[in-house]
Amino acid sequence: MDLGTIVHLADADEVAKAAASDAALRLRSAIAERGSAVWVIAGGSSPMAAYRMLAEHHAHAVDWSRVSVIIGDERMVPLTDAASNLGAIMPVLLADPRMAAMTVLCPQVESDEVTAAAAYARALRGLSDAVGAAPVIDLVWLGVGEDGHTLSLFPGHPDFVPTAELVVPVRDSPKPPAVRITLTRAALDHARRVVIFATGAGKRAALAQALSEGMLPIARVAEHARGVGAEVTWLFDAAASS
Ligand code: 6PG
Image 1: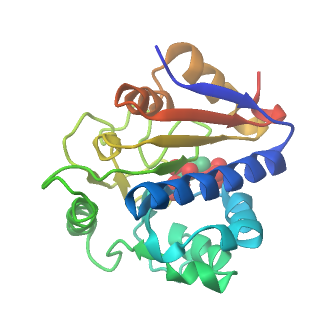
Image 2 (image 1 turned 90 degrees about the vertical axis):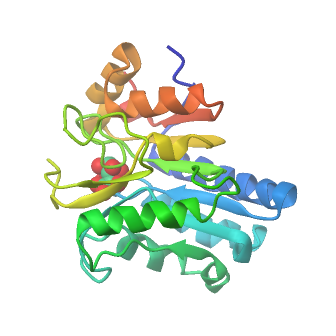
């Protein structure tokens, strides 16, 4: 089972620094190579410091007008709701006005989850050169839940099944809010690099299990990404390391 490379760093701050400088590098080289870059960002609290560092220290390093941003999973609440992933992330990224030039694909949270998932899948396919396929994604940031979920793909959950859909609705997420949309493994078919935020003592058990058994969603997603040729890097802080 190939789940990628594990990097051990001192604390969550070091993880955020490493992720932010890696993102600037990856997005810049994608733009140099193909004129544009696609970045899947993660919800939850763990990557927030990395968004902040990116805005504070690397905003100048990337031509943001060439970057398209996809949210990996979104809760079906208005952007102004405290539970909205994009609603929490965007003000942090936009702390540097240069970053406002990026194109953010916003899910249609005002419609129902089935319609929103289908519309978001269409938006993703719109970034693709090959009709009907997943787009090339230069960088994917993933968080991990205490139960080993990533995106809104929860262990043992009926929504975590193999599917060719790029985006699926989630109706009874064990982590509130219950109703969400999420990218699937198939959405990452042309991913080039995945960075996993493996931070905090609360994640230690799930991360150890993911790496040893490979069954939890975070491991299944990492394995899928390796299988399609993406680099996968787990950024561990000391608290999450066993
Ligand atoms: C969400 C997330 C989810 C998150 C993990 C980790 O909408 O809840 O996208 O997959 O990344 O639950 O969340 P924390 O970083 O807050 O622990």
